[in-house]
Length: 278
Ligand SMILES: NC(=O)c1ccc[n+]([C@@H]2O[C@H](COP(=O)([O-])OP(=O)(O)OC[C@H]3O[C@@H](n4cnc5c(N)ncnc54)[C@H](OP(=O)(O)O)[C@@H]3O)[C@@H](O)[C@H]2O)c1
Image (cartoon, rainbow, N blue to C red):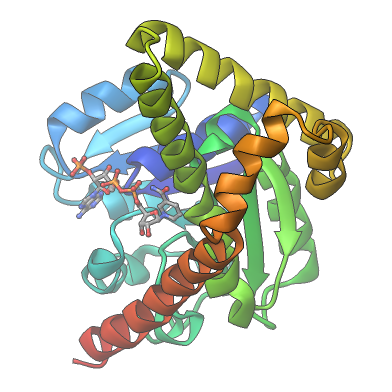
């Protein structure tokens, strides 16, 4: 039986553990939060996990991590230094530390937990449904069998992609943050539908179902260009609409968005590195 400690289990940590547990129930999960209120909420979302709040027990993180095979850390990036400094003495030497923080480099994580193998992952929130994307970037010293077990666990949460750590900012720019770009497009399309005279409820339902349908078609045939051309008849409505996106520079906008998120990821790495070096 594999034991996972989930230290700091908020939006992302909960989504990841939900995905992992949906595929393999034979896993022990010990999860922590800071506040009692969050722990109460989390107990409902992860009924099979043992949940403790630091507010109720100052030693909660250390107790959850002791003896765990994998210690997932899901606190905010700027809290990693403080959290890991406290946690490191409680980790078994064989425990694999799994950081999901954006903008904290593995070399800095290693300064905080020098005795442990370290894996950086970059998940996204559809992991809760088993439809996430999870980049997996293990340090060279992580044993191969631990990487295999982790890959297997994470596959319950979605598509696991092996990347070099240097590729994590690029992955963040299109996938970790990319989920929100699709949400933004949906928001814009609902607003446009309302301007065209639809009720907000109708527009929302239709845009959400359209996004779901488009996603399913893309999963079946993962060639968005070909799918777009297949529905763009010459002189038709779709081509008229698409030309507005293309004329407004949708490819340039996507490139700038991916670049901005990747740049911010690297900037956060530098900021957090300064904090860690004190
Ligand atoms: N959200 C995303 O889409 C996404 C995507 C990729 C990566 N990430 C990464 O995932 C990490 C978490 O992000 P999030 O959006 O899930 O944040 P979040 O919802 O705010 O979750 C943070 C969690 O940490 C807990 N916490 C705070 N201080 C703690 C302490 N001292 N000990 C134990 N737990 C503590 C919080 O508890 P309370 O609720 O009680 O304060 C909360 O459960 C970040 O590092 C982020 O970079 C997020």
